[in-house]
Length: 264
Image 1 (tube, rainbow, N blue to C red):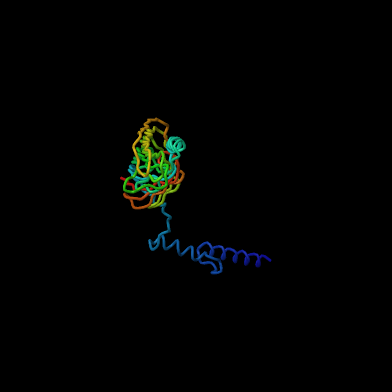
Image 2: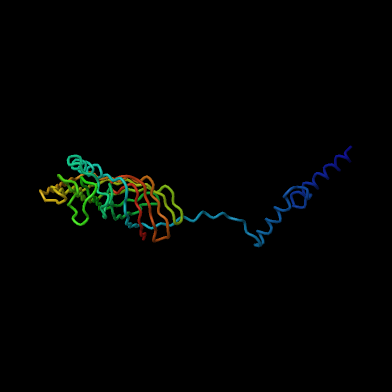
C-alpha cells in the first residue's frame, strides 16, 4: 500500500514541477505562448503595446469674423408699422419695378471678435449695420419718361422708405461639437440698438396725363432699443486660420448669416 502512495505522490510532484517551470503539457491553452512572449520582452525582442491618449484638438484663442445677415430682423416690427401707417392712409402699395429694392426686411453687415476662454466657452462683442429701402405708390402704371406723370387723373402719392440700424452688443458663445476643421456652436448676445426710421412722401395731382407737384412730407424718428441675437445653430468650416461660417437664429442680425472668419 505504501508503495502505491509514494508512486502517486511522485507523479503529482513531477506534474506540478513541470507546470511551474513552463515545460508542462502543450494542451494547457496559452501557457507556453505567454511564457515565450514574456521571455521575448525580457530579452528586448518585443515590447508590450501601450495605448496612447488621443491627441487633443488645438484651437486658437482669437477669432474675428465678418458676415451678412438676411431674413426677418428684430427691427422689422417698427419699420413695418411706420410703412403700413403711410400706405394704408394714402392707398399705396409696393413698387415692384424699383431697381434697388432690399425687400421687406433689413440686410445687415457686421463684425465680431471673440476670445476663447477654453474649448467650450468664448466671450466677445459685435457691431452691426442694417439697411432697408423700398418704394411705394398708389398707381400700378406710370409714364416711364416722367416718373410722376401717372395715367389716371387725381391725387398720386409716391413714398420712399429708407431706414437704418446700428447695434453694439457683448456676445457669449458655447461650443457643442468640435473636430478638426469643423465646429458647431450656439450664441447669446444682448446690447443696444440705434434705429433710424425714415419715410419720404411726395404728393402730386394728375390731370390729363400730366402731374403737378403738390407737397412733400419727410418723416424721421430715432429709437433706441434693446438689441439681441440668439444663434441656435452656428457652424464654421475650413483650415486652421481661415474658415467660412453660417448661422441660423433670430435678432438684430437676421435669421440667416453667412461670412468668413480669421483665427489666430
